[in-house]
Image (cartoon, rainbow, N blue to C red; front, side):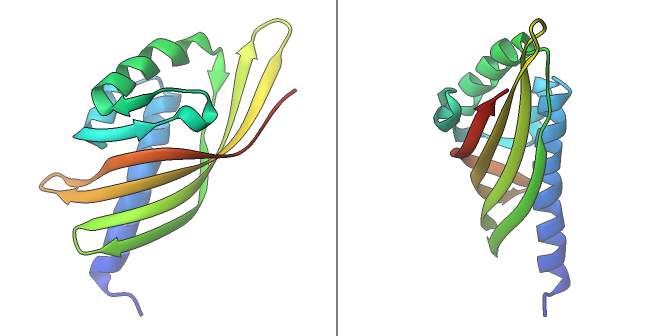
Length: 139
């Protein structure tokens, strides 16, 4: 049976992931500062994106994502392993993205977020994120 701290940690990490999706989908890129450690490494190359230190990737997101008319993230299958003040996770993300207004084209992306987390004085933070591609299809 899980201890209360394990349950709390799991929910806090899941909320961190939801907060990430909300920040991205709401185009509030500065909200990412409270979700990642300043030295976090991010690799979005599996889906055609960039990779590098968090500040550089955040700037890239703020530049590239507004070019899409609409997109959304839906998360599931949170597979978390928590060990004290560190954790790892693999989470499924379904991410449809509207590519153009006319004619309407939508790219349906399925990716896995493979993450490393650390507990800080301000709560759990993502310290490493690597995407693994599951599928994509343009319709």
